[in-house]
Length: 456
Image (cartoon, rainbow, N blue to C red; front, side, top):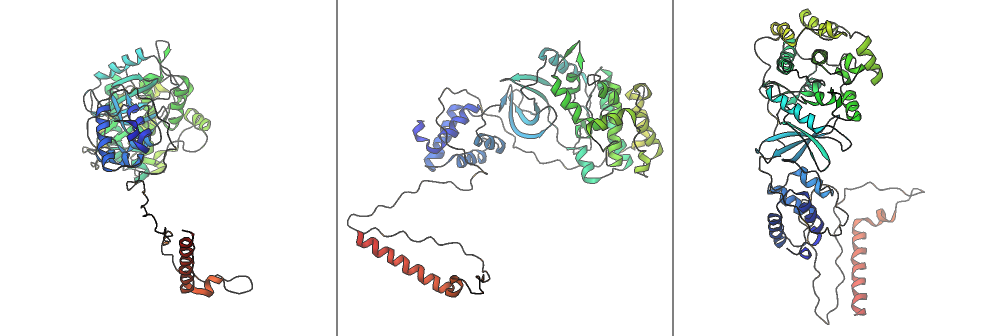
């Protein structure tokens, strides 16, 4: 397709080619068919058409209209939608070309530096952690200077959002969530692995009521391994700052000191949050929170929630001991303490959230060498509701006077009260009234037409 046929869509089609989202031949055919039916259409209309046909997602179309063409394809993953931003980067919903499955892909800032060799070894170590509560860390890679981490995508609602919406949870429900998380952590701890950044936003409650632990593996990347730091100091600091409400005292003193026993303290903070509706130390600056975790005791959970059994309060108190050796000897011991408090049945299943994008295979990617045309200012706002085409003037036969353009009819306006002018007099519009104004408009149009006719 010649670029001269693209009209206003020329820059958008060029960006589409550069994004590697659609095969060049298929893209040319799609654009050619669309413009043959809608000549003069602009980029928002073409983008809307591609979204409607399932070729692009709304997320991809919006980014392309903003001129963002890079980072849609990272290794085998095609980014379909943005799920949220975290301390270490943005998380996307992605489809893998390898197995056609959905993944959560976290893209780290470009400044992040790490030892990919050691990171891949960490990935392989999580392959042995098989449990319904464990969402395994499955991939790490670099593409176009961007680092990414990948986990299987799970549906559900973060525990943090549930408490924000419902407030304090019932004691047996909170204990059941903590028990499920503890069982998953126990499988990891048995393999010498840990979470390191456990908090309510990292616990996803699925439609079946099953808790699933997210972000497993990030803590291992942040910790020192064989004298080497896998991730840069800035990413480590951001991750620690985002998890201060549930950070263990020893990890606050040394951000690299992330251990399985530290997961116990964090799980105690999560359980406290579920039962109190707030964190153990909710007030103050970051420094004040860090000091509180190391030196202060939180208000007793039974004082904040009278429905909490003393036995469950004792579990939380032991989990949140300042000294690591004062906590449970192992996660298995913690599980035995939680089992009689959690009841037999899991929490009531929750409805699954609707998927953000339709299930489909990503298009084949092909690089383009076509030079980029000069691009006009990208249109702002949402995609257009209609297809805009060029207006062609109607030709006038020779020798015939050119009529004056018909006045445009203004949209009806609501009636307004007369506005008094200084001195208590009414304005000329109010004195003439609507009929008088209409007569003046008609006379003006007729005069303009006569003047134009005499000129020709």
